[in-house]
Image 1 (cartoon, one colour):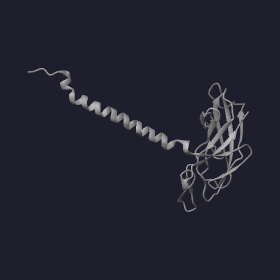
Image 2 (image 1 turned 90 degrees about the vertical axis):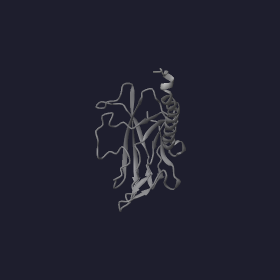
Image 3 (image 1 turned 30 degrees about the vertical axis):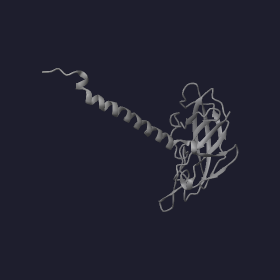
Image 4 (image 1 turned 180 degrees about the horizontal axis):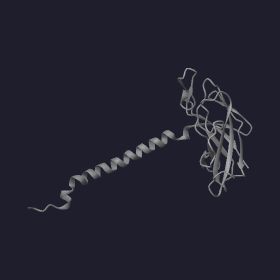
Length: 196
């Protein structure tokens, strides 16, 4: 019996590997870049709201925002070497078509660093009277109360970005497009804060 060499025995699997590996890598790269591009806020337009001001967006009045650094963190569980920044955002929406939004994000203006809302992670209990995102079932004006843990050496000014998720509920229970994506709108609310 003739002895076949390793290359001859493994020729077909090696050929498949040469074709499939680059194709898989390109497929993954394309998929990931599509996800990033679809979720990227680069094409979004902020509606900037300065201190003490309000704005109208998606038939909703936003602001004026209040903010501050929480000095007494007893009862909270912030990570070491962080400070806690709290914001309160008044929201007055049409109760027949309430607005939907994500939890706000805190963005350092000078660097673009971002922090997500951390109420639960900091040990704040759930409260049915304090909203951390848009109150879809609201029957009148309300406030979103949000807290963020940032490194203690981080200084403001900051932005607080509130991105709408694009749907409101009508009185008959159906949904109507609102916010980003509705009628070409890609706007979001951006509050300017500098808590001390």
